[in-house]
Image (cartoon, rainbow, N blue to C red; front, side, top):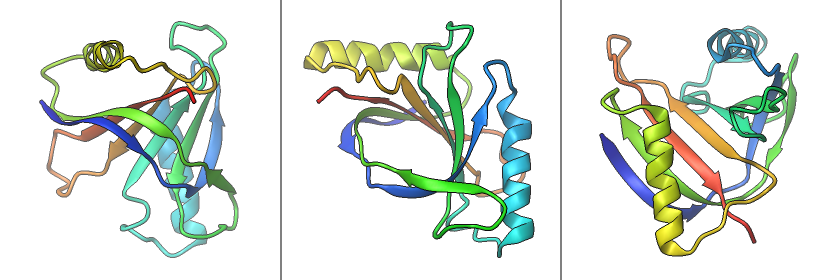
Length: 150
């Protein structure tokens, strides 16, 4: 189910990051990076409430470049950190599993075409998975963003 969709400009954000191999599974990488953050630093639920994967190349690219990012509020011991710059993006926030991720990307691409928007050539997409409010919750809230040119 689509919760929000539109165009916005993100704020710059400090992140801990890890380069992902083209075929590396994201879930263990998230657990590993969160584990380091929690062991080395005080756990901050309000800061570590989501993880992001930046896709520099389309998913079908066999040598695709990806990075895992977790927001932090300052440089952290034991991990590399940097600032993710502000971006103008088309975004879609959804919850549930009634559609595939690709179907949601199709909604965004259609929206871009109808609005005359062009995708950036630097970053293919960004996917954000928000931590559910309850550990028993099955439906994660996910946001997908396509950075815009210019």
